[in-house]
Structure formats: structure tokens, C-alpha cells
Length: 128
Image 1 (cartoon, rainbow, N blue to C red):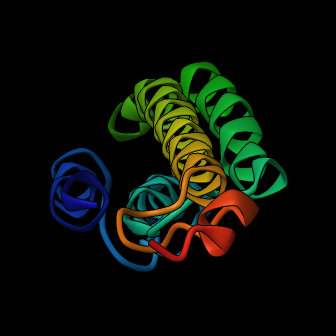
Image 2 (image 1 turned 180 degrees about the vertical axis):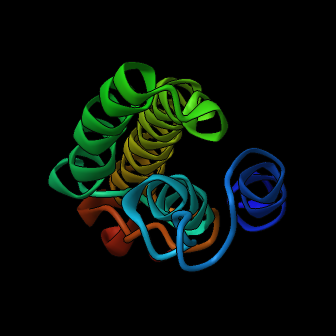
């Protein structure tokens, strides 16, 4: 997020002529980097189809950056790789945690808590 909101505009000002002649934040490269940052802020699992879009655009945008020599967009490829790996790792950890909670819930249902045992039929007949 910081790179797309702070670093990219400053790099553009240093390398391009300026507003009417140069690219702005609304163009896809900084927006793609900001999208990776926003997806990393999401609580829970990020759907795969959702983070594939900025990942593919980082490849497309970085190829254009290399072809046309747009120096400030060279970080797009790195952001795409790092963002994709970070989101995939986050999803894996989330899936692992959900499985762990499901296993704990299943084991909790199978073994009754102390004091919550049902009486056995033999105990019910024992009146002593």
C-alpha cells in the first residue's frame, strides 16, 4: 500500500514530465499494487479468483513497463510475486486454522465434558 500511494507518485514525478503528459495513480500499475495491499488486509481467506486478477495484471503491466521503459513500474512484477505468495500463504494458514478448529469441535462433541456424562443403565439400577 505504501509503495503504491507514496513511492509510485514520487517516482513518477521524478521520471515523467507531469500531470497532463504523465501517468496518474488511476492507471493500472499503482492500482494493482494497492489491490494486493487491500487483499492482504482482508480477514479470513481471499478467494482464488479474486487475487488472480491483480496477479495476472502484474505480469501484463510489468511487461509493458519493461518494453516502454517506465522505471517506476518495475516494482509491479516484484509486488505481484510477493503479493501472490503472501496471499497464498495467508490462505494456507487460514485453511489450516479452520481445519484445526473443526477437529477441536469434533473431538469436543465426541467426549463429554466432566460432569456432563450420561448415567449408564447399570448405575441407574444401583440404589445403594
